[in-house]
Image 1 (tube, one colour):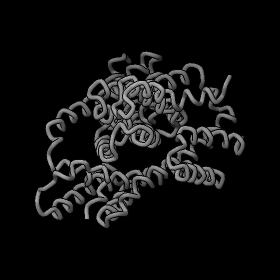
Image 2 (image 1 turned 90 degrees about the vertical axis):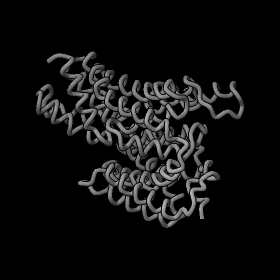
Image 3 (image 1 turned 180 degrees about the vertical axis):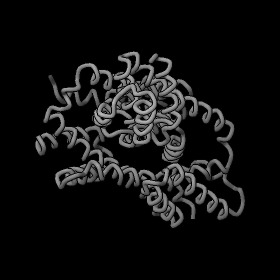
Image 4 (image 1 turned 45 degrees about the vertical axis):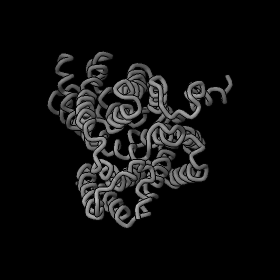
Amino acid sequence: MNLFDLLVSFMIIGVGAFGGGFTTIPLIEHEIVGVHGWITAAELSELIAIAQMTPGPIGLNAATYTGFRVAGFWGAIVAMIGYTLPSITFCATLIKLLAGLTGASWMNTLKKSVQPAVAGLIIAAVLMYGRAAVADIYAAILAVSAFIVLIASRDKVHPIAVILCGGVAGIFIYG
Amino acid sequence: MNFYGIYYIIMYAPDEIQTFSDSKSTMATIPQIFIVFFRVGAFTLGGGWAMVSVLRHEIIVKRTWISEDDFSQELAIATTLPGAMVLNFSMLSGHRMRGAPGAAAAFLGAVLPSFIAITMVAMFLFPFFSHSTVAAFLRGAAAAVAGLLAHVAFTMFKPMMARATYLIAAIVAALLASIPAVNPIFALILVTSAVFWKLKAEKPAPSGVNKETGADGGKGET
């Protein structure tokens, strides 16, 4: 195994990972566990747990941690670069393509057309996340309280403060 | 250790930098973009959508760096492109705010905390996660993140209730994307095309000049 193979593997994962987080993990399972056997299936479940428990995007966390497990610090760097390179390339290309279209009237219509779909996707994301995170009545109370605090404060309370308060409450409830 | 001082530095440090520039300016500087994205990356548990919720608070609500319309558009494109959605979003919104250097600052800001956290965990901190207090903290934080996501979904859904087309489209998109077998990108493209076609059909003449401002999320059209 060399770092170049690792880079190529993570570029393949980066191209395939539409939607990020939860599409990345099956791809890592296929490419890193199945095709190359660089980590074991047991290590995979450890990595899923860690990717969710550390701050930042879950897909990127999973990729970086896998890289570290496979080839140490440089493995982590190579995996991170490989995973983000397709994303950077696509964004840069799209920005170039869109630059010529900003004034067009149909672009303004498109901007409005995209809003309901985005709102719908976020609702779907909440439902999916909520099913996993809200497992008992205490978690439900915490989630509802966080929602009420954010609504009632009219965006005066910082969301990170809400996450940290939830964590502190978690220590009292589950600790 | 002054606890409030630490809280203040974490939450509000870039605002101090901002007050020295033009008072009403909504133009972000490159270091400000980096600091804001770094902070969101470093403190947001719960993955990409949680980061988007916090970023919305940082760059639309607290600072007016980009408009609601641009935010939605960037988010839609970010979901459609491969890779981590929130990293795509960081690059696109960074570019919107300050061109290519803005995109680089936002991207590095979002990536670095994750990289640092993961290498720290892999090298030293792995036993830390099995500690019961840490596990309890993470469970509570995850529940709060669910509330946070619900809040952002609510604020983005609310303007949709102004028009039947938007309302139906949002509900259809939510239902489609909730089906596990359906790729969310499919839901996004299908629903966006349908709404685009509907809006085009409604518009009698191409007099889109007064819609240039477009910050009302479509409510102004009757």
